[in-house]
Image (cartoon, rainbow over all chains, first blue to last red; front, side):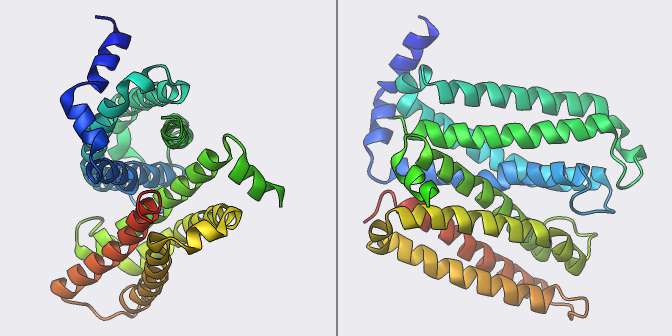
Length: 162
Length: 147
């Protein structure tokens, strides 16, 4: 079974049609997916802004990272569950949609960016002087901010095409 | 006011305006979350609340400006649609209450000379603030589903 066929099949499973046709479940999933943005992406944004010296100036980056990521993880758990269920309902139509594809590529880029940060910069964070972020870590923060905006734009736009 | 017509009538006008609205929401509610989590004792416990409020203020006001401006541009395209919508009325009312409550909370809890408060009071204030702000969001989403 090709990926396209698998997406088609997913959209037609009894669970998918049940969610898509439910008067309250679909809006509830969609609303939760959108309103988990501040907790998931928002906390990452606050950390990125801190790395760029634009907020929580004087705090230790390692502390800000731990405190923000703890809440962000809960937000992303909600995102992946609600996003997965929403995708099930629209899988066949989402497969060929350019905005859905761009969103998935953006998420992959963000995953790689986070992994690079974790490996290259995270171990050295305790040695940083407060407010002095190395250029490489600043680059990761700028990339993260720009690509997360891309994810939000693509996610909102794809919903208009189903 | 070509931008209003562009948002209302062009293929990508509304998706882009809505996206900007969501980026503003993410920023605004992220600052609200950090502030209330701190108040409830759930994050950044080592940072004083008045200092935190002052650090977050530009982003809170910036996020609010983005949601209000993008929201206003969406609204004026089809005002009759929104004025007839019950969720929209709830949204405007709770937005007003949320801003008022947030302002009062910052003045009483996050001023440099604020008296220390009990954990129960701080938890209740944080819960009420977050409930108000997220009701604004839910009511906004409900405009698309409920008349």
